[in-house]
Amino acid sequence: MQQCSYHIQFADPVHLPVLRSMWAEIFGDCEAYINLFFSHVYTPARALIAMVDGQVAAMLFFPSRRMILQGKAARVGYVCGAATRPAYRGAGIMATMLQAAHSQMRRAGDAGAVLIPASQSLYAYYEKHGYRDFFYQDTLLLTDSPPDTVPARLAPLTDAGPVLPVYNAFASTRPDLVLQDADSYALVLKEYAGYGRLYLWDQNKYLFCRRAQDQIVVDECISAAPLTKTALEGLFSALKAEFPGTTSLSMHTPAGCLPNAMRMRNGMLCQFNSARSAGGLGYMNMMLN
Image (cartoon, rainbow, N blue to C red):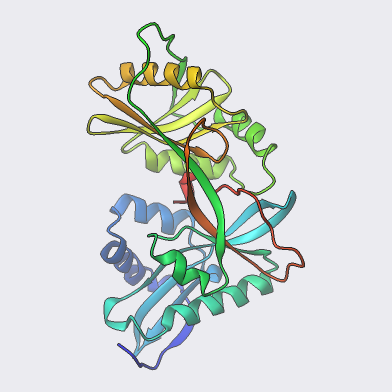
């Protein structure tokens, strides 16, 4: 669709049934996840929709997040749930919605906007709208650990409270970080518990992990200090006991935590009215993805 008449407005609660349906249709997420988003993340003042002939054609959300940016406390908008119905794509609606969202964030005093593109191809799209690569993660695949490896000490958690001291120690070492708190950890644990597990590792590290066929996937491991090869072998040994029959371990951590790892971009930043662009290796927790 190349041309259509539309207008942008805030998404009021009356629109929620349609937005929930759109989310399921376009993103394919389960009802439990959608319920968590709209009950804990959605706020009318930080949600926009595009209307065409009285119908919702597109949606975009930008909930407020605390961040350490260039070593200083800041607030940013987290752009998420950006989607246009197939029939209305190609008309420039999302570009207009991004501009409108940025204007609202500036009025609210946000230092910028952050997002995680849903695919690699979308990085180029968001770059055209002022975003740049800013957040990264390291990945590493382990397929073996020596027979005499001492297994790591893992404590399964059903409460996110014990991970907060670990997270705070990690956060103190990072100049560019989207911050989390007890409420956001409780929320992600509630969602993640449906398919994965949370462990405290040796009292000073934690990991969210799950089984994917014969592989253990650590979606996030947080540690204030870099992880050694010996520590990773001990973790693999312990997790193989937790997930019998698995043969490999896929690790994902903030940049700089893994030895000989592959570095991947996993998010973008658009700064507003900054005299000096932030640089470095920022990190957004997997709970935002």
